[in-house]
Structures are given as C-alpha cells and as structure tokens.
Length: 474
Figure 1 (tube, rainbow, N blue to C red):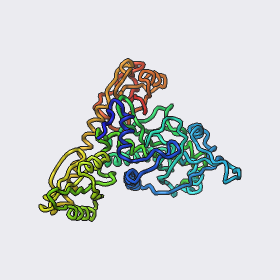
Figure 2: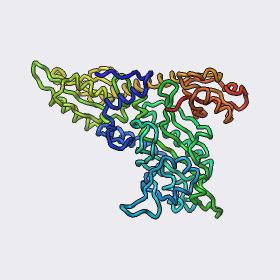
Figure 3: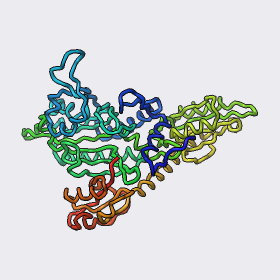
Figure 4: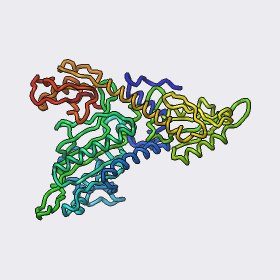
C-alpha cells in the first residue's frame, strides 16, 4: 500500500494522491483542465446526478436542456454578468472556414442562454412559478492551477433557474433550495456551512448569494455550490414579464441554484483517509463487492459467491462480483482504496455454512447468513453510513473556532467564527488579518454552539453584529 501524504498537513498533495489511487478520473487528456471520466468515476457521478434530480424534482422543478452555444448579442445584454465572466469564456468565431456574423460563447453558465427563451415562455401570472433545471457541461478558461473535480475547465454542472411572481416568492425558492441541498447532503453524509456572501463577493448580477462551503483543513474552505436571488436584475434586460390578474405588466423575480462536480471532490475530501476514498452508500458506484476466497486445501466458493451476488442484485443492491485471479488481500486493498462501503468475503467454509463475512470500509466485521442476506447487508450498509456521518460531523465541528479580535485571526489553523458589524470597511480589515476572505454571514444552524453575537472584531461596535465566518478559500 503506498503511503499517502498527511491529509491535515498537506491537503492538496493528499487529495491528488487519493484521486489518482482511486482511478476516478484520468487527467492525461491533452487539454489542460479537461479530464476523462473513467468508468468508476462516471458511475459515482451518475449516482450524484440521480440524487440531485430526485431531490430537486421533489420541489417541483422540471428538467430541460439548452444549447451550449450562446450568441454574443444575448451574452452582451447583461453587462454586469459579462464583467464577471468575460475573462473566462471560450469564443467560437468560425463555422468551418467561414467567419461567423455573430460570435458565439461556449456557455460558462446559462443565464444568457435561457433567459431570452424564458421571455417567450412567461406571459401570464399563470405561467409562474417557472422552475427548471439542467445537468450539462459548462466551460470556463480557468487560468489558475487545475485540480480534478475542484478546478477544471470543462465542468459537469447542475443548474436550476426559476422565475417567480415577486421578491418574497423568490426568497421562498431560495429557502426551498437550501432545504433540498440539506437533504442531498444528508444522503452524502456531508456536513457543510451555508453562508451569505458579502456584497463584494456575490455572484455578478445577484441581489445576494448564499454559498455552500466545507472546511478542508488549515482554515481553508471549499465552495461546493451556491444559490442566488436575482430580484429583477436579469428579467429587466431580457424582458421576462408577466401580466398579473389586474392586467398590469411586471418583471419576474429570479433565482438560481448551482452545483458541480466539486461535490464529488468534496465527498473525497471529507470522507477520504489514509487508505483512499470512502464513499457514502447512496453514491458508491458499487455498494457491495463479493470476493470469493479460494482455499489451498481445495474447494471453490465462486459459485456460492455468484449466487449471493445475484440475490443482492435482485434485492436492489448495487453489487459486483470480483472473481479476478488476484490474491484476496490485493482485492481487499483495491476496493478499500476506491471507497467500497461493504465487501463480502466468501471462502469454502462460508459456502458450506451458507454465510458470508461482511467487512465495512471502516473496519466493522460481521457474519451474515444466506437466509438473511438482503436485510443483513442493508443493516450493515446503514451502520456504515451512520458511522461515516458521525466521523465527518466530528471532524467538521473541530474545523471551526471563535475569534474575538483581529489579532486572533492571524495565523489561524481553523475557520474562524466572528462577530461582524456588516460594514465593508470592517470586512476588509478582517480579510487582511486572516490573509483570506470574510466568507460571509451564517445561514441556518451554526457548526458549533454559539452565544449571542458580541462586539465586531474590527471596530468593537455592538449594534447590528452578526455571526460570520472567515477563512482561506481553496
């Protein structure tokens, strides 16, 4: 087993080694930042997609798919949006050898692709709310160091776009999205922090932005998703209007909700350890692998192992039979490094006794009888998921600490929770002190128990202070 770098001391080195070991992606494609999804990584990504689809469709959102190319004429309608993306877009300027009359943008995100069509779809208040999503690839010319899943140029992207009657209903949609992500994260055993970004760090064109962050050690954080309330900032330039019951024409209020393959990177980062990836049950490419263990004294348990695999498959378990000629120990290491939740070891004795030895990724071992195979495996998987979640929540709480002064922010090794008065002047002083970012104000439950907010760490004012977080975005 190769020795991996220390996760806490050298997170990026550890992360890159784990992704390489687990064969989730192949970064050797000749375009930097555009990686190949391997079969195993693709299966994990497909499971992520299905969870996102299930949870967002439960809120009434419906799937769509828009073209990848956006005319410059439409892209230019939202000047503030362009200001945020113009340095990152890919341009298509020729069709074959013919120069295009209107240059095309390869979508970095889809506001400017969708909203001209929304203006055709929305006519009356009866057309609202319009809640739609798509899962597509987006493209951004990332100039920083690329890293698999975390910072890439071709992004596997989930994006919901909505049109609402008014600001209050748009705020309700933001709350609905936060709740939907909470359900997704629970299925991934993924603790996170929802943080309303300060105005200088919100999405271009947004009224406000709520980011979904995880700590990754050493006061560093990773943004894994975001939800934006736009008010009328996009509906006005794109003419998305509706007629209310009195006949008055009004602009819709809009929201978006975005997640990317960073979510897979976050799962690797949170649950991985010195042996590699550790997948939660809901997104593991295989939930169970059955490993026949032949004996030198004779007896082939493979037929019995195959029977167990078929029964689990009929019972709705994602299962794989590993009947390769490798040594059992090599197979155990192979699947542990790839995050398999549960393996079933089947030797001649087990075949004779009609049992299997079940070993979880976290080391729990139990015997399951053939008569109770499916419920026994499901119980073992549930116990593993519970233990994985408890381990993640414990590490999550340890990643945060309080700071009462600017001096305490210097050299911080945890994400700091602070009282902030809300002014940009104090916000920038906080960022300078931590040599990072004021991530924003907390939304929902805090990561650790907190008292009432105290004086602002920057100016000592006590009025209007709120709990906020400061760290170093990855």
